[in-house]
Amino acid sequence: MNINWNTQIYCLIGHPISKTLSPIIHNNFYRLINENSIYLAFDVKEKHLSTIVEAIKILDIKGFNVTIPYKTTIINYLDEISEEAKLIGAVNTVKNVDGKLVGYNTDGMGFIKSLELNNIDVKGKNILILGAGGGAKAIGTSLAFIGVDSIFISNRTLGKAKKLSEKLKHQFPEVSIDYGELDLKKIDKKKIHMIINCTSIGMYPNIDKSPIDLDGFSKDLVVYDIVYKPINTKLLKLAQDKGYKTMDGLTMLIFQGLYSQQIWLDNKNYDIYEYYDEIRRNLEKYVE
Image (cartoon, rainbow, N blue to C red; front, side, top):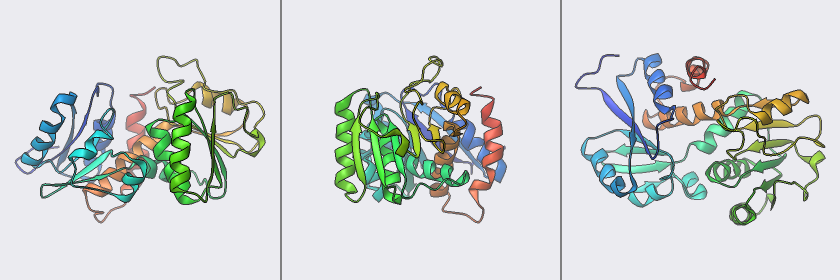
């Protein structure tokens, strides 16, 4: 890549961002499509957030991603946000349109796209979500939106599970939504079609932990862990031992990034998703 006066700048803001894989994803994408753009990562302290937003406008940075802890706070600095971002209550992608900042959330869209890639249809299905944080909120909203039959939210802190459950119930009254603790005593495991781990349990360095055991579930269960370091978590290993279909967090991570590109590049005349396989191959060596 040749950086010159016409190179377009995109970036990530958050704190801390030392372990982020986003520059690898996005810069690989620019290389593959021969786009004269570069993606950088900036560690931004909270007291500087308003300043960096103004700097983005002044420098005409074309778009940026937002990671923890600013996915909610950033809304206060934006001119407009998408309907999906409103439903989720968080923004992870911002487009700069001639100084007007428009916010989106691609986490849920990235998750749904990853299901499509693996030919998994969740419409009318019963879903168990482990965790009640930002990932669970985005995924739960997207699942309810596309028409799952039920969502059960399990979390170590019952209050957080209740809050998310009530939010989704209010937004999607046609979907059956309930909550409980990670002991899963309130659910009929045999009726669950898919488990999605949105907790950090099993993430490096605690790689020998699983949020739940997998006893008592049906043979057709699908287990999805959005943790991507390690790629093959303890939960996924337990699922594989039982013969369940599994999916790892790297898929969602890549697709939410590619959805950001779709927003920034105005759906140019190429299918951004055709580059998934090569981006994944380049990324895997960083998370093994």
